[in-house]
Length: 396
Image (cartoon, rainbow, N blue to C red; front, side, top):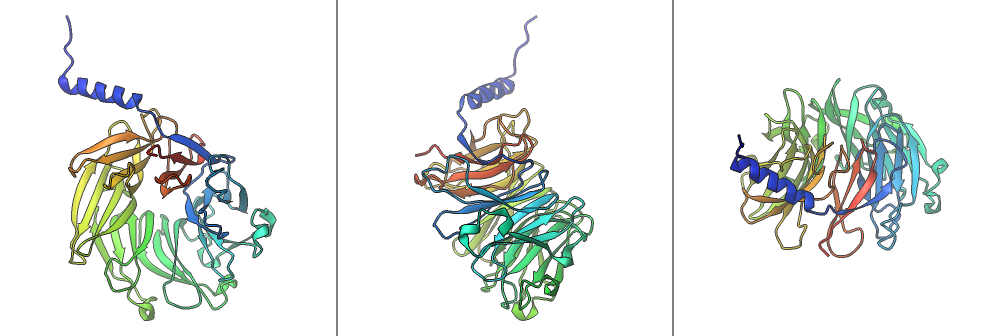
């Protein structure tokens, strides 16, 4: 007896065959020398006009810096240096903490380390690629306090130098800030100010959502009773050590991951948040500062669980598309996909980026590394040990 294939199943099969035939973007490796590359952060630390990267290798216990060699050789392995050996680095970010012109690195560690470190950069740029020219020290205020997940360098109080917004996950999950002292090199003099009881912080981004000229902190908290998308409103420099007003924007019934945001008229804002539940959550606001509309965009079929999301005009047609990375992508069609805007906000056309190679991807950065006029995708993959990688946009 013949079995009839339902129309919906047939359409799914045809979709999978069509996607399988689509070529993934060409992948280039920046570094795959260790284990567990976990996020990429960007700054031009040697002022040559090319963005450089830093990454913590969680399983390898390394913090590394990569000097961008320029578009002619960006498809080869990049010049790199290990700036610190610390266990379980979850995040690494550039910040010139002591205002000496040499850009330092701050790493946030979870696991049993549970400490935030500064890796002081050498002042002579000729020494940037010498590991022994970098010096690692721990912030005493952070030692064994909580599992630190993310650091946002930000000028909070208008004094001394750059401060550090820190977020963590349980135990003792918190968002707070380290206040820079008159001499930032004296780490004992940094002061800790807790701001928000958390569950598991994923994103910390600075943005003036309230329109008062002060940068607020936009965060995603993926676990616990306070989970969701939250705005911590900066109360002003003179009150920066007080508790900051917390505005819950939505997503409280989702496991929210990374976010992106953008300005829209008249003045308004839009925020996009990835979720482990595999919906993209869109938040929009036009004029009232704390009234947000929430919508959902379902994930594409046959990918992992969502991790990072960014707006990007992939194909240069003037419409903003969406790109997102995934965890748990083993055996899936793709761990990084882009969703083409069609003009209908309920209808997005799915395209491959990574293809089936890779399992756990992380934070996405968007830069034109080959200087061909379109944006490429930079990310990490930490289970199949693809390492620090970038995908070449084929548009041009």
